[in-house]
Amino acid sequence: MAKIISTNPSKNYEVIGEVEVASEKEIIDKVKKAREATEFWSELTVKERCVYLEKVYQKFDERREEMGKLIATEMGMPISVIDAMEVGSGLEYFKWYLENSEQSLAPDVTHEDETQKHTVYYEPMGVAAVIAPWNFPFSNFIWAAIPNLVAGNTVIFKHSEECPLFGKMIEEIFEQAKFPDGVFSEIYGDGKVGDFLVHQDIDLISFTGSTKVGQHLYQVAAEKFIPVRLELGGSAPGIVFEDVNLDKVIESIYFNRFYNSGQVCDGLKRLIVHESKFGETVKKLSEILEKKKVGDPTDQTTDIGPLVAKRQVDLLTSQIDDSVKQGAKIAFKSKMSADLKGAFYAPIILTNIKTDMRVWKEEVFGPVLPIITFKTEEEAITLANDTDYGLGGYLFTEDKEKADRVAKKIKTGMISVNNTMYLNPADPWGGFKKSSIGRGNGKFGLREVSQIKIVATEK
Image 1 (cartoon, rainbow, N blue to C red):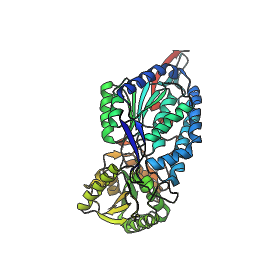
Image 2 (tube, rainbow, N blue to C red):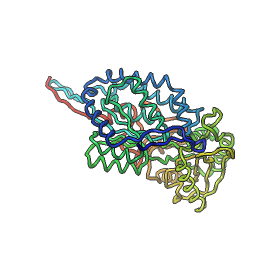
Image 3 (cartoon, helix red, strand yellow):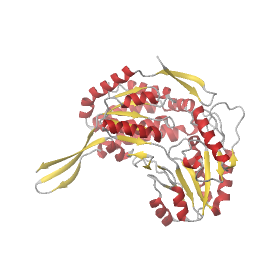
Image 4 (cartoon, rainbow, N blue to C red):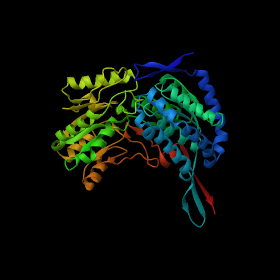
């Protein structure tokens, strides 16, 4: 039986465990069981489903410290931020679904007069194939799987091959909570396993990952004539206007680029700075990075951990080397201990950026920030929209009218102004262009994975 080997990216890729890859027969059997379970699960009310899911929530909450340690070890997120920004955040979203799904999926009366009444109902779709990435192992699972389960879909879940042990922990918790058989199950493996899954008897594909894979899954869904929910890549712009007080926002700029070693789909990946603020911005960001510790993610004093795997280091290195050959300048590079062995990459700031460089045109998934200057508001908007992606966006200005005006012109699904965060369980998550199809989270995400039916009745 083939196995996935889990390694520690901060300890020179030492082996920490292994998981058996799902066979084709196992996948077929789990899809069959999920199909058989749809009748039971779909006929429950939202409130009744949440009773089952509340037990799962409690089990996750009881093991939050254990989950945090495993995430730090298996994918490299610093333990110092995991509870607040990953495990704690995931539980917050889970709780929101438990408390708000009944209202979000309640029937809507769209028309009523003396003779008739029109009511919209949100019904389950059936069997959902849910595939999640490694960068936020818990939150990505919550965002994708829980709305499906609440809405009445049964779920076959595949986590990334980079965090199979965390996937096993999720499966174990569902078993401990005595979740109904067939309603939630897991399979393990790489992209080939996921591809085999989506070609089975399913009714919905929910995928978070690269745009390349998302486009392939869109074609699979088109052939099967089933809906998709795709959360893909991003290259979010951040615009620093001339009127901004940098001292008020510089920490936000740092956080939105370098949090989780820059492995964030909606992270600030291209900084567009007014020419009058360029020198100050580079200086202040360099001063912040100089104080940050790159190191072992299980150490509470570490600020920036490793990338998830050597392949990510290799990709990032090729992107940076290519851009430097074309004239990009390394304005700052963090210091790292020579004792660090594994998928570590020293955070850097790049300047002298041209828009045909790889660090500008491609999604850069690592602790690297390219900075480019602009003269006019129109130029800043053009630069911000110069990408195939449209997930997040960040504006830094003291002028509220300018912020409103520019926000309307930036082609992204989510925009933060100054020190705000658009991450909230009630808010939609998703983007424009090659970043998304559909929306997740809140009532928007719940309805995205539901069939919508209108029933007109006589009074």
